Image (cartoon, rainbow, N blue to C red; front, side, top):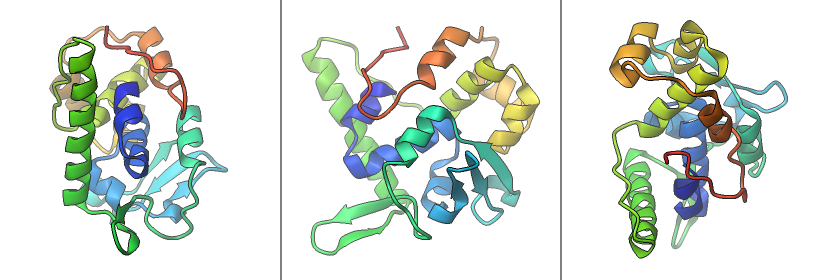
Length: 188
């Protein structure tokens, strides 16, 4: 995660932080408005028009995500905006999200190749799944994590994780990644 955040275009790092530390799908991220993020009460209000399955849910904002979100002022506009060469910032869409994600992964793999480290192999919704994995390790409440992610407990446990041992130390490292923080490779 730290490699992704360090190699992402500055305007895209907020999307990665949201995906990894709050667990929404990319299409939920691009629909989020600044008014949906309640830093003072440390929650993201995923309204039915934004949330998967069109069911409202409240997602907690972890301490490290507070630091990522506090870097920007969103007002009532979209949380994620991308910079165009001529007209400033525009709301992002799924194509822009995919393009920026590919660019970020390419940047990570260029750095890894120079360091003679195996490339990052990306899987669909990898950050969302990582959030679920580490969040469960952190709180040990499968139903709670399922509600936060807008899914069911069986789906989280068996489709995404399988028979995995959940490690508290890894969860602590995951939820301690902050802007400008030291890069930690928790996969090794």
